[in-house]
Image 1 (cartoon, one colour):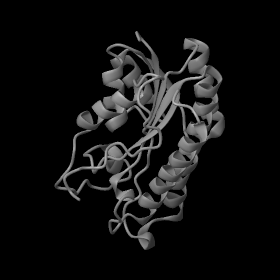
Image 2: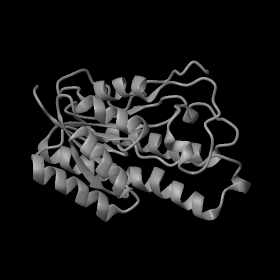
Image 3: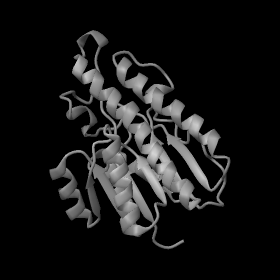
Image 4: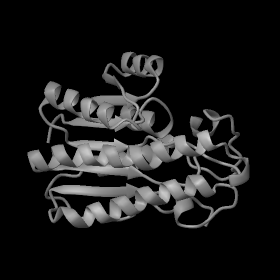
Length: 231
């Protein structure tokens, strides 16, 4: 299909960055992140567009999508990778940490889907891939807030997928297991899992879903990847 345009929300580190690295080889890519220095560094490194965007702000999300559409005309796919870690017992989490996790993982995901689907419906095609977590499938002790916010995203995707009524707009979700990324480090937690997949491995599957053509097999709403060697 030639070069296409993709947005990677949360693309300055971890899985999002790995996705962007794969896409820039053949496509136009816009990386979104909430830390200006990180966005600038990734944009320079990958030679792609970089947009500073806090997904917890609907105005910033709307402006970011408008900027990409104004620059490239269309959005062929959106990888929703932005997420905040909230590990630890509920009693140990500060109200500020809880609020921010909900703002990013729940509200932010909603805002991204709202704008993504607005533009995809307008143009009549495109894919959205939500990066969930295996923790949604099976409860794990010590991450009640993180699991709850990621479960919100899963429920949102399932409902939105059913609402499209078209194979040309695919709303998909991918549930990787633990990955050794900066997700935990950014809030001061350690990565403790002994079994994990690398973001580069999972990124291949995200990119495959993003590049599905409008007439490819209907997989909207499916949980595409649900294995990490743990369960």
